[in-house]
Structure formats: structure tokens, C-alpha cells
Image (cartoon, rainbow, N blue to C red; front, side, top):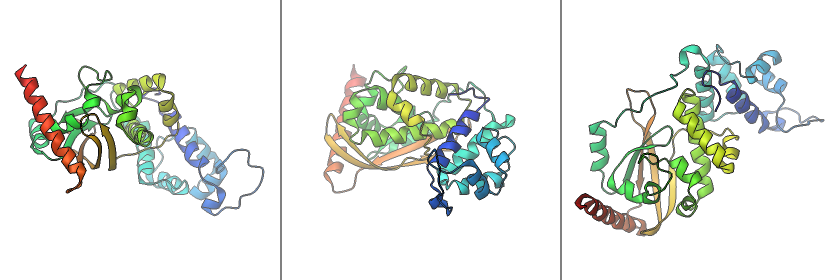
Length: 296
């Protein structure tokens, strides 16, 4: 990632990538001729945004500090950004301002006791708490059992599992995640959104650098500048203990005085299905494993 005090490259590449995916017909402009590259021209985005071509060119070069929210909103509408992309653009603008830049080093605070109690109290759903870098901060026994291959992986660092490292750096993940590619794209989009919110996070920059060095697929997906804030939908896994299991999952942000993003994730099986039976088997397996570990 770039110097945390200068996110101009991220701004430039994001705006250019969103401009490239739009055709003139999509925004009500004539197609014209002699288009050497796909997508809209800068001057067309400027007209749609109601600003001068000089001003938009400067913006796309990364000079976003001081730009009003109204103007950013106009650019977002011109580029047909969705809500998450619009939020990412505003995060980039905020981070570009001197007052919005975060300290380079930020220590992860411990999970509060009441939060862990709440997580432990859930018995028929797999629950885990993660930060914006996709480190697993806390989990209930079923959550740990469901993600057993990740917790057993060599990609854990000092005993802490990280979804991105496991997804891209452990070959086991390709069998465990049935839709590996879809999950990989979502993983990168979550990290990209976090990079927009916290460009000064040293640990995040190091993680992205590590993944970019070791995984060509991560590099390609990172360059797409796709963003995602919350993660929800259907997860299909091939678990080493219970085999195929399909779960719905939801995520929610938890308030945190340290300001670092923390997301609670809950995976649940549809009642009355074989997947619910598999969850019950995993619950029993988790209890047995935990009892064995505590007695040794």
C-alpha cells in the first residue's frame, strides 16, 4: 500500500477504474468514435458532475483534500457509484485531509468481557468477531469448530487466525470454501474498504503487502478496486468433519471506543435441514474437542 499520508494513488486508480466501466450509452451520451480506451472520458465525467475538466482532472490525480461533500456526491452520481463505493470515496477524501489521517501504529484492544460472554452464549449458530483486517478476535466454540481448518492452518500468526491469509495462502482453503473465487473477491473488497477508512493502519499495509507478494490472484483482485463494507449471504463449506454444509450469515458493526472497526458475524443453518443436523454434530464435536483440550 502507499504511504499512509498520501492516498492519491488509491484515489486516482479508484476513480479511473469506475470511469472505465461506464459506457456513454449508460449515462445518456452518444457513443461517438475514436475511443482508444473503454469507458467514459474525463471531460464527459466532468460535464456529468457539473465541474470543469481541469478541476476533474486534478481530482482524478488524487488531489481530493478540501473537496466539498456536495461535489463528491455529484462525482459519485456521475460515475454511478453504489452505496459502498460512494462511502469508500468519502472515506478516501476524509483520509486525505491532515486531520483525518490516523496514527501509523494502533494497538488492538482486548475484547471486552461482556462481548465475549454474549458470543459464548450463542449455541446453535457459529459466531466470531473480526476487525477490519479480517483477524479473528473472538469466537464461540461452534465458530471455532466450523472454521477448524483455518485455526489449524500455518497461516495463523501468534495463534490468531486471519481470513485473508487463510483464503489466499493455504491450499486447503480451495477445498474448504466451495465458492473459493467468490469468497476471495469478497475478502479483497472488505480489505479495500478498510484501507479507505484506515490508510494509516501499518498492520493492514503489511498484510496487503504480504498477500500481494505471495498471491498473484490477490494482486489482480486488489487492482480492481472493488469495495464491500458488510458481508452477508449464503456460505457453502466442505467441512472435514461433517462434509458439505450450507449456512446463511449476517454481519453487524459493534461500537468500539478504540474506533477500530469490529464486525460480529453469525452463521446459521436453516431449521429442519440436514445442515442444521450438521451444526448439531459440530456442536457436539466442539464440546468433545474442548473437553479433551482442557484435560490435557
